[in-house]
Structures are given as structure tokens and as C-alpha cells.
Image (cartoon, rainbow, N blue to C red):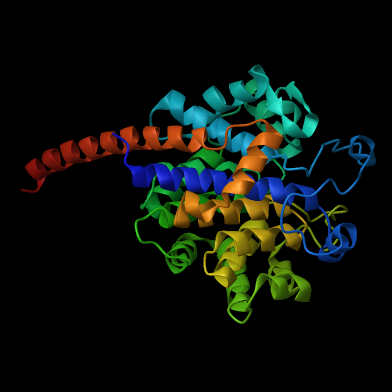
Length: 382
């Protein structure tokens, strides 16, 4: 039987992530100043697209962002939940090759940003399409398939379910996520997925606080990812509200030395998205900084991410997942959950409920396996 507490944690995490994703989708790619100029102030809810002619304004990304539409972050997260339902076990890179990629390329779903049923492959961006190329057509070893891809937040953006399945065990979440993400990412993109899953697992522990989440992130993060998180958290410690963080540009200034994308988000230089031990993705450290400023409050963490701009949907989604795991469904405004679900024509609650059921079964199997191993070891070291 799945406990109410586990269901609440999983539902809070996944609805919190999805609503953050939908709100942040409208502002993705823009600066805080451009965001305020377009919408006449801070964005604090569902807004229309930045471009009214969204189909043609940016031919490389003809997506209907805004109006409460989830993006590829949530599409991929829900597919990972389906993979867990199929596997009924912890995941590895092989599950990405044998289960996730077939879902991406083999079954149409409703994609709000395309206003059509289509393959998820037709919505995800280039670094995510790379998975299908490498694993389905290239037959790469799943454990190494992420090598050669553009290093980005693509794995971290959908990894929250790994944190739920490993609830209250950040170390196990980190290890599983690093394995899974190897099929998609390398370097600091893979590392960020591990740390993001660990943060969700830490948040899912009964009685957890935002400080527990941040401590887990700092303990497990390596290289540039750790340095970037430390820099952002040091800056966040002297900021009282997300508006100050965004308007002053201080969080962006803190992460800039560790971010390869550069100041012009849409015109990246030759050093962008290359493997490195001294860099990090921008999204996770900024999400953690906003969570620290907001003391784990879902609304302030997410709305801060929405107005930060740049990769705002992923920042707001990561912050929303962690804050939702901390606070459960009550932390995520019910009116926004209802509105995003309706606008996106997607069930936002069901995936969390199903993930909780899988988690209960997986952890029961873990417990039985560990007990058997302990009994066997007792014969070696009585």
C-alpha cells in the first residue's frame, strides 16, 4: 500500500515542476528587462506568448510558449514516470535506450506547444534528439551515449522522478541519476542531473527543510557544479527577496564565471556547452539560490525563476519540483495546477500518484534485497 505522505510528496514534486515549467515557458530566452517591458511588470502567473506570431517569429523554435502550456521539460518527466512503471525497478542507462527512447520516437502524445498530437521527439530540442540518434540509430553503449552531446540541462530537467523513487536517500538518487543521465549527457550536464535528483530525494524526507536540500547539494556536487552552487548560495545569503535577486542581476553575476553560455543567451560563443570540470549548467545553481532566498516557498522560488529569464522554464521547473517535494500539493497553488492542466490538456496529478505506487514497490524490493544481503554477510562476519 502506498502511504498518503509518499503520494503527497510525489504529487507535490511533479505538479510543482510542471506548473513552474508552464509559467517559465513564456519568459524563456529573455532578460528580466525584456520580460517586464513585454508584460508590463513582473510575470506572476499565466501570460500569453512573448511573440503573438509565435509560429513564425523564431523558425528554429515554432512553439506556443505561454498561455499555461507545459514544455518539453514536463513531457520528458512524464515519460520517465512511464519508464519506471514499465521497469518496476531502479533505472539505468539501458532503460533510457530500451524504454525511454522508444517512447520518444514511437508514440504520439498531445504536445501543447505544437497544438497537435506528435511524437515527443518532434518537440524536444537538439540535445535531446541526440539521444535518439545515438541510442536508436547509432547503437551506442547507453552508458557512454551522452559523450559528444552539447552539455546542457536536458537530463537535469526531467530527472526529478529519480529523486522520488530514492526519497530520503540523496546518495542513492545521485548515483542512479548519474547512471541514467550517462545515456544523454556528459560532464557537468550529467553531474547536474545527479545533484538535482539528490535535492529532490533530500526534500522528500519527512520534516526536511530547504537547508537539508542545500546541504545535500553541496555534499554531493563535484567540480564546477559545486563551485557554481557555492557562489550562488553565498550571494543569495545577502538577498531578501527574488525581486532583488533578479532586478540587481546578482545571481546572474554569481553564476556567470561558471556558465559557458555567456551573456547573450541566444548567440552563444565557441566555448558554450562543451565538457569541462570547471563549469556548470546555470539552471540548477540559480534554482537553488532562489529556493534559499525564498526559504523553500514554492511561489517565490518559482516566480523568481520565471522572471530571471534565460532558461526560465527549466529554472522554475527545478525550483518547483524541489519546493513541491518539500511542501506537498498544498505548496502548489491549486488554481494554477487546474489552469495549466486544462491549457495543456494533460493530467498533472496522475503521474505523481503512479510514481508513488512504483516507488513503494521498488523500495519494498530494495528492503528485501538488503535484508537478504545482510543475512548472507553475517555468515562472513558473524
